[in-house]
Image (cartoon, rainbow, N blue to C red; front, side, top):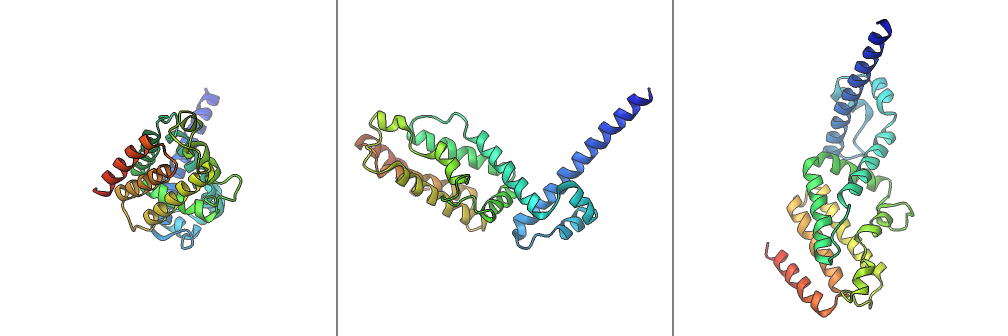
Length: 220
């Protein structure tokens, strides 16, 4: 009976620790989203959370550990958001972007803080082998089927198109993180840029549909 009570007590302690860690992590996200990574400190986080600095170190480690955790969580969320996208180019782009926007809507502080963390670690740099650009190539790059079915002509290297998609996302991301645009504007800006990149190598039939979509976004 004593062992059962000790086990139950340990489970309760672990559950309480997890809840406290989640609460403090939420505060960290809010502080980073509001002030940026440079201004964020462990001591301020401890003050805001009403705990000691050693408690923060015990739960998270150093500031760099919090940054890495933000990045790790974001990568996992983005994997989920891009599972089984449609094959058709326009619907493919809408699916990926709409899923991303929907995810951001659920926790803007987290995404703002995590995107800052990504920039801090230079993971958006196309030259980094394990960076986000290389990961995104598996999802957002022109698909083999588009060339095989004649939707894309192959006059422009897929890598070149992917770089334009990357640049579009980068500019919109920076604008949103800095509060220059809202999420709706972010969606329009990214989607329009992606469709323009696709139009550069599209078949005549696909080109017409892309232009209709782009013009529709321009009117919004």
